[in-house]
Length: 572
Image (cartoon, rainbow, N blue to C red; front, top):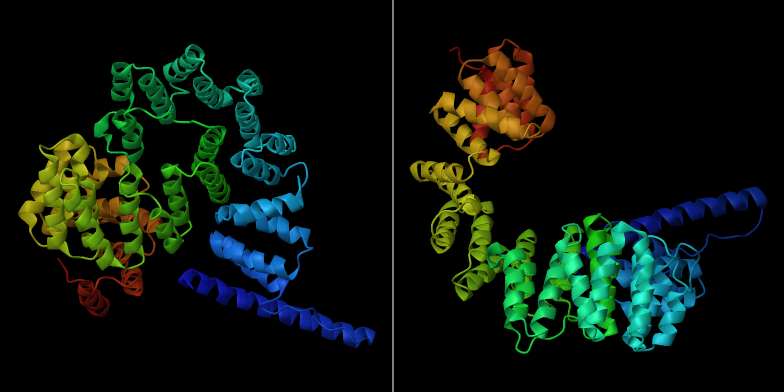
């Protein structure tokens, strides 16, 4: 049992206990008031109600897998409860248990005018098994609302492809002409369908319309058009298209995957079946819902995409990302491990595994994985940068700086995009008390990105702490505040340089702004206490120092704060 499921069960047991107490009180009142012998309904942890409560809590915490399990048990105890099944099938889909969800959806039916997921999921199951007539019947039950305004006609178009009716497939897409927002979806699937049904001229026209409009151009469209050109024997055009729109130096797994079509000999079609076409539509829907913050629905569409088109590695990574966002760390690792390691997304998935292991405080395993990856691909810097970040988080400053140095050496001459490498190594050097090297890195980062507020802040604050270059530090910090006017830490730095320059009133004004943005930071509270003391607000100063101690500052700061509480600040 995972730690998350253990937590879910514990809280669910508490909810059940509350329900039992309420039910017992109701029963007692009924007995006293009515004189009958009614008893409280069963609400044990194994009852349908207990399973429902446990599932409800698991769903609220984003634990779809546990929620689906609890609801499944509850349905087993009360198989005639349609409402329970309505709550269950979405979560069963989100957990990736699509066959179970489809069985529930068949029992539920269309579920009402606003419930399009049940018939859609049954239709997808039918398409997967090649039963296009059944799929058509279920798609007719899908209401045209929400994302189904796009998914229903696209899925129906691919059903026509499966039935060998290419012309009717294009006709199904015509309903998408009603909205400018659906243009990308319509043209993309039109091009895929026409390419698959041997209408190359029409497919190319659709691809060109997609690519030439910045509003409809997308990575998927570029990848699909390049694949089309390669299969048409026009390799030079495909390479030029990818180089113009997806330069290889971007480092993105999505771009790397898109460019991998160049390595296929002979090139395989991006979509070779109706099922894969529907998978691409669901992939697009999942990404749209994820971008709009609907994690559960995004996960459902992603799981349906994998169900009907299992080769979509990018979707596996998306599911892992969504599980991470729900803090389902073990589930995310399990998902990432299903991505084949030798693929573009396999590398990205392993980086995410290392990051997630770190969140679970399994840092030794995370370090080992990142070191192995760094040795495996000696031309890449990403595993080393992530290793440096991990070591820096563990306060292993020298080891962190060494990892960043290896990455910088691999990256070659400094370029603007790599300013963060120098900034991160500068922090590690500064914390390792190697200031000359840290200062050199911060200045290099600023040379690459002169307006970078994080670098302006860190270097400016470091100079203030050492009593160096105070006027230049002030100018840098004022600029950083202009760039990030809601960043409490940067405003604190500006307040502190004003304090060091003797402008105590200015320091108080800025430190009060900082405390409003970062009220629980011990250093900000200590700084404000110092400034209050200097302007004669000594009671408020002691209050701020006392607050600083309650927020658990670093151990080396505690004695100085305690001395201030006892003795105040020495006169200047």
